[in-house]
Image (cartoon, rainbow, N blue to C red; front, side, top):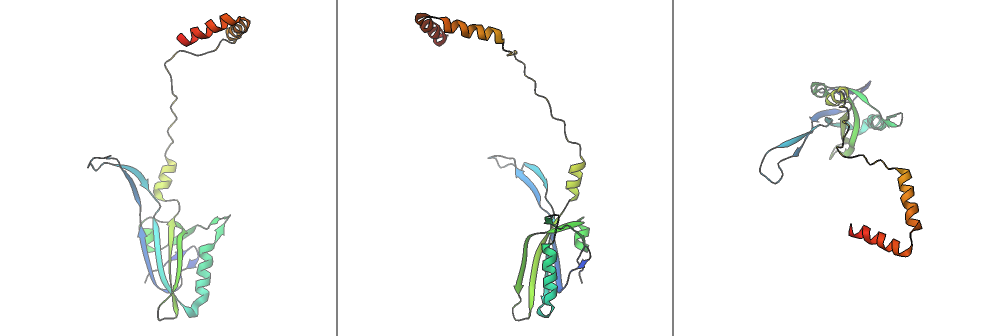
Length: 179
């Protein structure tokens, strides 16, 4: 018999089944070759899938479970401390309801099949990543000449251009084009 507890809430019903999964992300780095090189993209939060049956006579248990799934704290989905052998063996300590919450009438019986997903909150890899020092940004240095503008010289050149006659203007622009 499996036990599932979220904070002070004991999961109701019977036929409780727990599954767990861990998503390990990688990206193919072999390009168009047949190589097997991959780039590590880290571990994503673990997921717990739960299925159980609640008898129709215990409709208040379904109502309460729905309230637990919908609970919010400070406008965000509530985070629960989980007590379950499978979850705790995989290092999952905190979860919140995620992705789906499904209720179906059980064929031929007066009961509901219920299934939902709990997603890990603050996973161990995430906590380790947060503790690691962030690399310092590297300053980029350019090996070129400075382009400091001499504003006095620029103003003088603009004034000389304005004082030119029509022929001088034409020759000035022709010189610019040919240069």
